[in-house]
Structure formats: C-alpha cells, structure tokens
Length: 367
Image (cartoon, rainbow, N blue to C red; front, side, top):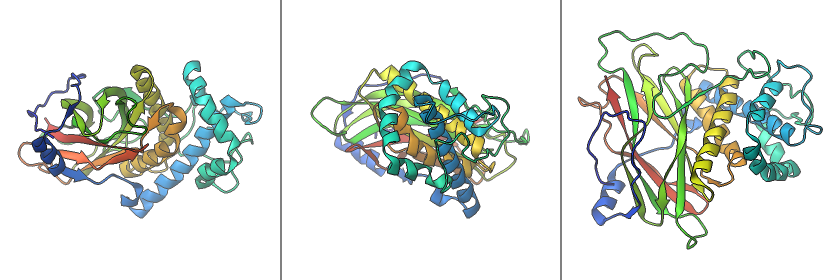
C-alpha cells in the first residue's frame, strides 16, 4: 500500500479512487504494514466475555422474535404488555421500511422452515426459548420506556463523541491533556481474491461499521460504497475519516476503543446496499446495547461482533463478509509517539464468499 500524506482532517467525505493493480513496490508496502489481529470475545477478561456472550444470545433471540413476528404475526405472537423486551424488539423491526423488509422475506421464510438452524441461533439465550410464545422469558439489562424503548444508537458519518447509548457517569480529563480525540482513518482497501463466481464482473464493495468508545458508548458509521475490485487490485482512499472517538469520557489511561468493520459485496444498487447495511447495523446494535449487563467497552464490542456476525446476513440481500473488529489500546497519550500517529496498519484477510479483502488504516490522535 503506498503511503499517503498525513492529515488531521475530519472532513465528512473523500473522493473514492478507481481500482488499480498494485505494483510490486506497493504490494510490498501493503504486505509489510503491521497486521492487526481481529478483535474477538476470546480476548476479553472472563467477566467481560461472560457479559458479551449473554448479551449476544439474548439480542439474537429478541431480534429473531421481532423479525419473525413481522413475517408471521399469528405464529410468532406478540406479548400483551407493551413494556416488555419482546414488544420493544417488535417495535424496532417495525421501523424497517416495507421495501427493505420485503427483500428480507425470502431469507426469513427459509430460516423459519429450518428448525435446526433456528434452534442453534437461539441456543445461547437458553434451552427453552420458544419464539412462537408471546414471552421468551428474557430481561433486558436496562429499563424499557414504552413500546419503542430499546436504546437507540446514533448514526453518523465520521464523528463519535461517545454519544450516550447507555446511561453512565462521564468523567472528563483535565484541561492539560495533550489530546482530546482519536480518529480512525482509512487508507486503502485491497482485493486479495475476488468473490465467487469470478469472471462475471468486478466486486462492488460497501463498507459500514460500529464504533465503541472508551466509556462503552456506541455509534453506527454511515455505510458507503468504496469501489470496484478484481483480483490483485486496490482502491486508495487517501486519508478518509471513518470514525472519531472522544478521549474525554473516561479519566486517565489506559483507554481502549473499538471499531467493528463490516464489508458487503453488492449486486444491487450500491446506494441501496449501503442503506441496507446501515439499517442492519443500527437495528442490531440498538438491541445489543439494551441487553448488555456491563458498561465495559470490551464486553459491548464483543457482544456486537458476535450478534452482527450471526444476524447481518438476514438483513442483507448481498454477500456480507464476517465482521472484523479492530481496537486501539492506549496506555498513555504518548502511545503512538510524539506525532500521535499509529503508522500504517491493516487488517488480516477478511474472508467470505470465496473472496478475501484487506483494509488499511491508521489511528491519529488530535488535540
């Protein structure tokens, strides 16, 4: 990957370059960028992992209850009470517009007919979960206020000042702090291997994500079309601002921030695919932050990774890759040296549907 001029810009848009084949030098530079291990719940403490697994199981069951109720309200009956987790999930799914839900219907019908798969999906929430029963016997970690009481996550382009998704005490750092925020900046996307079947045209890639700040608050990044790809090509993004994290919502160090990256290979209108992906990530994340029993950022990020990975394909009519989580762990404000720049980083291969992609990025600390 070729290096790019460093920038502290937070502009909301950038020009997407056309694909090009990597030169030998560019390939060496891309391959020698530091490879970041994907974030998974196995990296969490036992307590955080337990919270993440529990929230993922409950979130999945509630999400499926809402989706299948809308598909077949008689078979998957709603509870009589409006202030229940099930009613809140049903209300969240009701917000999906008719056109988008119609595109989901064939996949939901196939799932409803596949009882073994359905049982596997809800197993983490409990052995006796019956999605056809009005009540699943589940409780959210946070109170529900009314029918649409799921915690709502913010959706935006590039800034993330830890907009509150869960109630918490915010302690602000002292005025002498060197940096106030950290930016996640995308540099390039590299197609290692085009998705199957090959030879039928290039891959149209859409990218979305979910940010989890140091205090555990969340934000869904507005999904966007990245470019067209064939084997061995890449698209330079220059210095594309993707997410911004406040460093003022927790006092002192260490601080850990997360981003869950979600790639989709689109076979439809790319703008529609981006909207579908944003909607999926927003709906799933809203349920996760309502079920999580821990304010720890790692537990929240782990629950989101697990739940998105299990459910996003129900929302997306295109080929969704497994989510790839990245994290920045700051032991001090000097974690990245005097210039606050992490340097060139990239994901490992994000593999799915016979294809493989890598995303190049850097973290930048800003005043």
